[in-house]
Image (cartoon, rainbow, N blue to C red; front, top):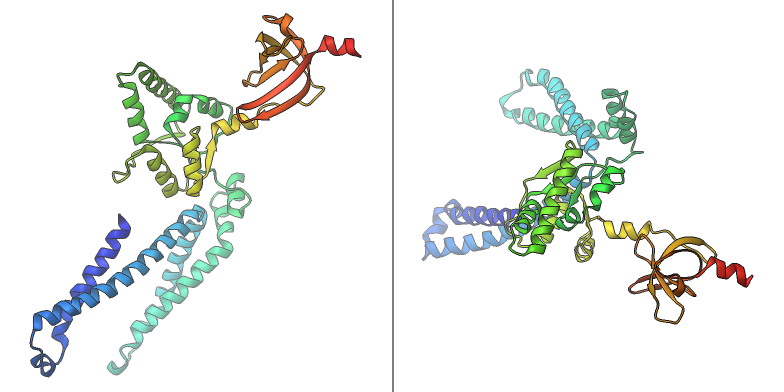
Length: 361
């Protein structure tokens, strides 16, 4: 929306200038014009095209500056701003005595030129010195904070803001990740996510209503446990219809990390260069890896497809097929892993009872 406003303003401004600039032509030229209004419209049209080109250039430059500002650490922005202010103050102090010197009227343009040149020069020097010595300046502000020193030196990066989506809140595992410290930084809950949870909680469908109420209960529990880290963000995007698209837009705007367990949202966000923390991927990554020869305790829950097979499951849901385990259905058994198989449906482990292994030896 802002891009369109910038371009439209340049078109209107350029068209208005072209429309009124006809009056600057000499009277002798204007007397030869048969249709003055048509000439005005043609000039305004050409000027509007020039305004469109300039507006596109300005809009592109604005977006580049905006992207650079978003990726620039806050400590660098702070020190550069201080350096700019100091540079301007020094320029004014130096140029003040010069402005009192008597200068002939014919050379009156010297004073404003010197003021502009001095301000630009000292501003540039101030920003350059801030880039060189800004980290030392931050250390002087708070010398007792090791974290501040590491951030100032560039060794430590500040924790990025995390945005949680509706599915992640309802899932509930994000609360456990916060409790054990796996997620750091500010936790941001957009207002439109709260509205979606409320709509689910008010739904006539029993299943949706239960999911919505569970999400609100979990969110309240998180807010009570971490009141200083949870922030309800009021941002909304009226021109965007879906909640997933709004989450991606907000994450791009804030340069934040999106926490979710929605597979499709993860793929869409990755395509748009948004960093994702997928809870399901984390659960998959921390699953224990069993190699042939490893032993584990297992409860045999049901019979397998093949004769004498028994089926059990690990805590993470991984299926374990136990040869000669059919007679142990309903009981616990110590088994030895023989092999593992990764399928599209998940991972399967094949094992034998430890007693059978000892007997075969």
